[in-house]
Image 1: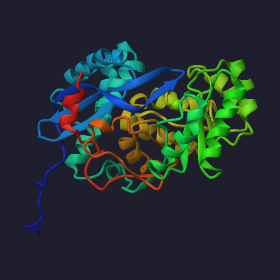
Image 2: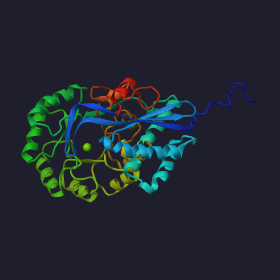
Image 3: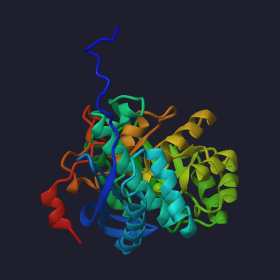
Image 4: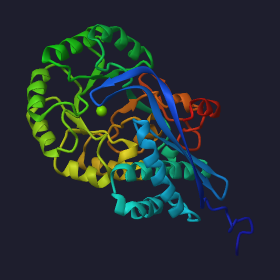
Length: 373
Ligand code: MG
């Protein structure tokens, strides 16, 4: 006998793609970025809203580094909006359909950056429609993720690094900071390390990033000279598209080598892992393929037993690290916070994933209007 109380028409969480809203902002940086890849006083963001026929809206943003990239991303997103119009929003299907739609323009680069932004917004819509935090939708749960502060210690004057390092630690009770290396001489890098270490003491982990600035020969010389400095990792010593060179360096240097922010998609990630390119990996959500690409990469990292950290995108990345087998470190940056209504909660060196539906992104509309470009 049927239970009359059983609801055979319980609402499905199915969502239908209606439209995209794309806005761009240029927000100020509290501390300018002085890196080998560029100097930045402001930071561009592409804000993406996926509107569904059912009235649920999903949010995401992209950090394209340079405003000049925005029109190209917009063009790709326009193509994707046309492709998905009227379709049921299943993120995995949307990811596949989007790759097919842009296949002839290339499955990496700007194509994948646009697909990644759209993918993150679609997953957010699904999480909101399901009344679940993204971490829970993915099978994990809200909670803390250990984080390092990445927002300072650029290639700025060495005498300023000590005070800045103390400020960065205090910003969230951080137990780990990232500093940039690759100054003109080995002696300057050594002095920079000593300055930061003297300021923060022996118990703070110091990650280091060369931002792809060295030639292969320079990298071997420099990393050997710095190999006994207790750096937690050496990141991107040479340009990212020389995996064989990176693998050679990884084998010759004791300090773990970290890469990943320039790996495009889970297949690129698989190739890097299969080739033993680095010791550690830190995908960037806008290049790895959004949530879908991240989870596929996370499965590869888990199976390979490789620690997985994140690059930028602290809000969404924190959810994903809560659902990743080999979750390691969250790279914490507040660069998008001027336009976020609810910035990441950071304390005691951890970002805590909140127990509320979605991926944690809500717009501060007044700020979006103020910084619109
Ligand atoms: Mg980096």
